[in-house]
Image (cartoon, one colour):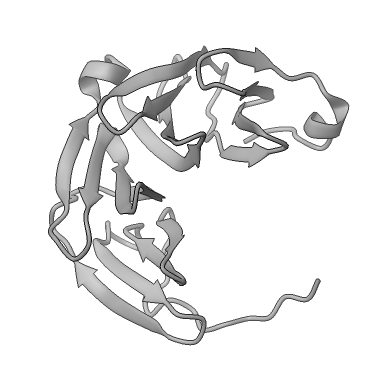
Length: 193
């Protein structure tokens, strides 16, 4: 496999959300010296500013396509939806589902027709929550203490949805029952997230 460098974003940033839709890479939010609200698309050659939205008001860290729409996941539990070229609309404020504490979204993934997002409490007791959206409502699918600061990735492999929380890795087939994974092939080399 060969990698080649392509044009970078017009403004470098960290902590942004990205996804692929309609043959383009979409990048939204993130931050450099301040939170950014620009949405850029990349067609394989050029970056284009698609729009700038003040709707977010927070750092967007997760971006995902679900049921043909873009979903943006912001710090502190806000989720926005964009259908076509319409405006972004807030569809969820996580406080009622996530509980007390300050949560940041880490990323999102679509698995078995449902949208999952990983949230981490940014102070002790360092809780990770995986939230499931079925197109109607949001609910906590996995709630676990991590024992330290962690930013859990979600990934899909061999028919399972995996969530890594510190040195613990969990997987599910159905989004309801999660099991801790002790498979050396999966956990090899993982020391901290």
